[in-house]
Image 1: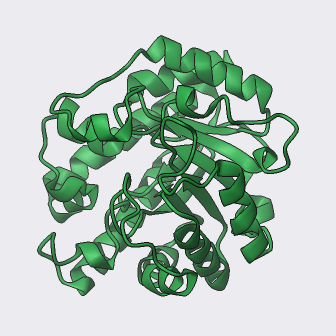
Image 2: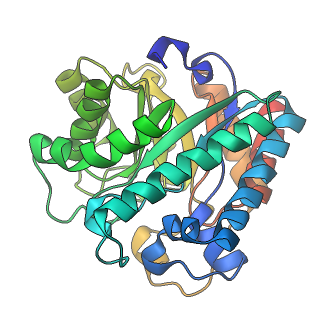
Length: 308
């Protein structure tokens, strides 16, 4: 799918919510290493994922929007194979199965505009950049998973919870080499900066400069709107590149969330109101959904607030 043909560039699309936190805390199902890819190992796990996605497809149908179907592959890149007790070939198979599941659901919901997104997570932790790769290292690392997702039929790639500029750049270059559109989604701390200390503006500008503005759009995820709404500037060129939001339910910091043993679902009504305000300020934001701590309740409230 060409970048120019991505339908979410021209109309409102929803995404799902915080898949891993919903499955783990709300449904009480263990996810080793927070890896939802493990659900695809069993028929029961596949049924859980299918039911989860159908809820959001039903919501999109009711609200008259499209839906970005994000694959359950955020923690399914090569470094995670051994810790999950998988060979690389087995992990490849599960990545393919994740896309095949979404393709089947799209066929069942032919009346709902859908885009199948192959989800790429960070090589390391989603909150801590750890050792930062070079752009070339990041491109080499992410190519295997990205190629598997592309070969299985993903319409686009989404790099979710990017903590640093070189890794985001490497993913964008990987997508360009594969000829797939890509959305780059950065996470920020409570000060609106990446975990590396870089500003959102710096991050977007540097990835664009290095890739000839290849990403179809940028997103912000795994942060509460109160962490970044003050740093978004209406008249800045980099802000115009932000096309999506997948916010956390909680206003707590990443460090606080890491230490919690119970889920903080925040205030869905307040979260929805904050999204309504952001979408009014930045009408190019056409993709909205949730991240950690959110579930169908939060995305429903956001959709109703932003669409009416």
